[in-house]
Image (cartoon, rainbow, N blue to C red):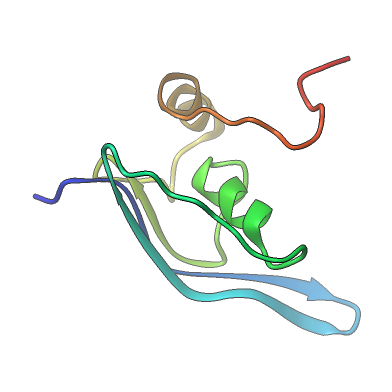
Length: 100
């Protein structure tokens, strides 16, 4: 058994665009242990928000695996995702998504 609270394994994220397939990520892997401090930095448009949306179960990777506390997040229904977010994930949005 590992000590990771978050495991991102070889995820890929692609979008179909009128100009063809856009590859956002290719084989991204990340492991986070309890107590780790992680900073996600990069230029605008590099995919930081897309990665955070996948980790927070708002979006799904095209391929690969995301595990939270050793549990695969792939086949969860929306209610299960909501419960995991409610109990385990905190997000502070860049925009005023929580305000009227």
